Image: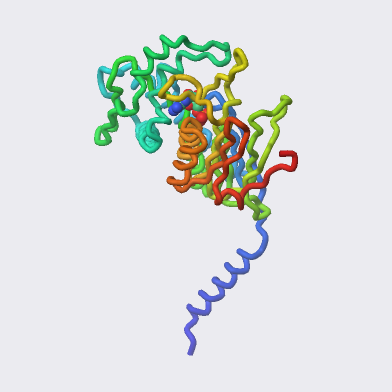
Length: 338
Ligand code: AMP
Ligand code: MG
């Protein structure tokens, strides 16, 4: 005689299989909020409005909390405490602050210092909105303070020390990506299986759109003529992050030369050999920091680093020539007019 239990188990399995085949009633929910001096947009795919709203609320709160910890401009942030205590004492910080700094130091090491989170003293000398550039003397005084090797991390005590007085940590090249990863983790914790988090140009995707196609991310033309964003290509992604660093984001032109916010830690002046660098990797903390690093390294060395890390990359160099990894070719479509 056949036992009853296996029959029931089989029936449940069959029902589960049928349910997973039938189309689910998923909807797309989207919300945007200003965080970290930029707009954060989160899109989630979910069957219930209540679940989406709860997930979005918790996720924006987690991002806001992180933004408060690493706010360069707020005296109350942990980052400001680290900067105030430079050359004096180690600052105990929360796990997220420690982790993002540890990741920044990792990228700095991998890029030979092309990405350097101690770029603060040089960044402070520039005013891109006010179209002001520093004198060569000011830059040469600030440069000795820029060296990621002078960041002393004490994992056991979760503390950070900047070795020299006057050093300033600036996490502007990595924090947005890290925040996008925090958001993705928070959404998943809330049971969201598909979504897209965009912290300006730092984007993390997971799962698919309701029509079971990948998310599509536009790459901007770094030399567009009009006011409106011109897209030169679209990248199809699922379970991946993408960041773009560009010389068109914060810049001014003086005497026919472009000065922009991505600075070469060796010279203290804008890196000149790229217009735009997009990196695709598993996490946005990497895509954010490595897009800045590759931008500074330039097309040849930068492409080498991207490949060594196993990332996909799209580099538009200073002449407007496009360099692309093989892996990205199958995920990207260029617009017809480019
Ligand atoms: P992103 O837009 O991600 O490329 O980051 C640019 C921001 O990172 C700048 O606004 C600075 O705050 C900071 N930054 C500029 N140059 C560097 C660099 N070489 N390494 C690390 N951070 C940088
Ligand atoms: Mg970056």
